[in-house]
Image (cartoon, rainbow, N blue to C red; front, side, top):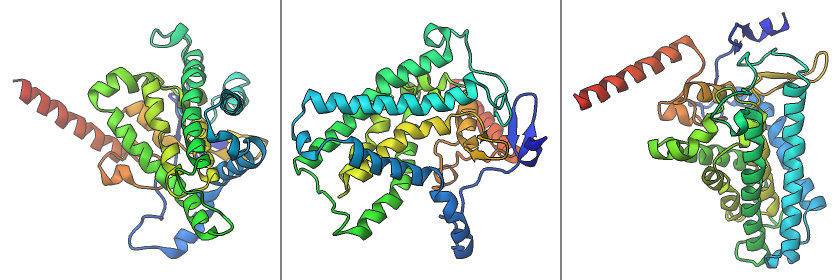
Length: 333
């Protein structure tokens, strides 16, 4: 089977052959040659795509900045409509190809089962319906609201407007650092949301998706949406250009579809395959207390929550859980 080149397809689902790693960006001592070989995979395909989409948004879809000096229903509703269309098309494409048409069956699917259609934890007992409702009725309006605030700040001169012609170096630096900022921001917010009370009343809604699909990525409690998307205005405050803010907004609004797609590889032709390779985040949904972050910044390794998919990592997790249970038992005795 073709899958055997990349991993093992067990009865429970696909398990990648290669263990999860962070790449050489933060390796010490530095490894220049390895870093140069790795850099194309950092940019392609998703980081470059999100920047291209940000440029297209700014030059072809956004109204003049002058119009955004006041909060007017016209341009705000227009922006909401553009964002709604982008999310529906993007998430709908991933979901349609893999979960409605099922063009590759369960090949490369981490969990061999399909999303639940009879589970009380979901609205109308249907996982996909629940995910779509939370994504469109909460997610899109809230990330649009953060974009509206950022545009208003730019338009009124309350934050600096970086001219890419006058400062091409700083413009490029922010573009390069934006994905890393996104990883750190996501990790911090995610760890906070796993505090028991916040998890119980807020984050558990997202974790109902034990077997995630594309629409699961944006399916969150409104409070979680507020904190998850607040990085949009934080990027705008960094002496940036609207393109930086828009590219980041696209990353955090459309990127979760890839992170929750549920497949290690997506077949787009007889030979061509797109690598999603978000096994780390799938393990987070499955095991709960590992891999709070994704990407190249080794935050989970630094803070002791990394699981690389190996049997050794599984044993370390079990030992950690046993130790915690023993501590709780001793405390209650």
